[in-house]
Length: 375
Image 1 (cartoon, rainbow, N blue to C red):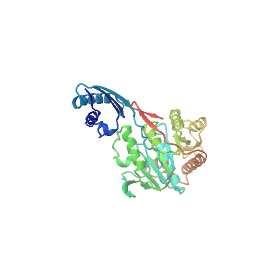
Image 2: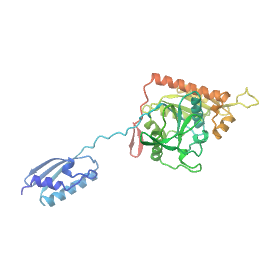
Image 3: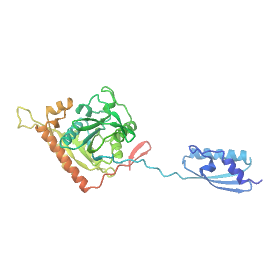
Image 4: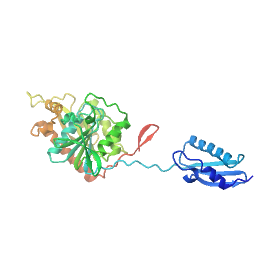
């Protein structure tokens, strides 16, 4: 009994690789066919590394050869797995028209991170810069309230034939927030991937136009959203906000460590101390350190990062945030001057960073055994 090589090739055209849409001969998986009388040796190269896929293909080939070529053919199948090189998803691409991206972060919630973000943005706008805010606090967006934008809905605009979201603008600041797409009493119950997808849409599907600064209001902690942001965007620098108390400082320390991690390597522009002290109106010369004294300043010195300034506990700051009129608009007040000073210091540190350090590289993140890992 002699086996015909042509019959073998014809038989293999009846088998299709899963996901290929081509038969075995057309797909190029068959690298060699050797016939010795009633013996047949097939050399295959597959892209699917799973053992189950290989075994299934072997069974199908045996059945096909025995049916179409000869029922007593002796078949040996050699399968080599050669997985194609993984195409890395393009991440970290800069947004056209945006010169500088600053992440505003805090290790702990409730320390005034969004207050600092909104006031710094308004202060930059008052200085004549073009500014935007991306509210990345998916689960607790507060920027719409602080910027007097509650109930606003972004419109769709056509940019070069592509539909884009147009940010809402107030006080000279462009804003996009998940809060624009949810009801005030609606909880955002999303897993990490869904939140990351929403963020990517607000980042790359938005008509930001030309901006000198895009401030990103990050959620508290060091989690999925933070990794998604540093993976999606080359961030110029980060500002960490903390109160002076030890509980907040411990979390702020972790936030600084996250940005300074070797494979993330986002320069920390500095630390802002919020709720630094309280001065009653009737005793304007007195300072009461309700949460501790100079804790964030000492943290900055300990971590060798700049101290950008302090914001006292002032009732007008809270009132201004609640009514959507940032305190930075009170430019001649003490609180307005404090915010302006912090903003100027931040810009100064950013200029140093851009002068002396190379551009920030986006983080590459892989998924391993269901967990995110930073390369």
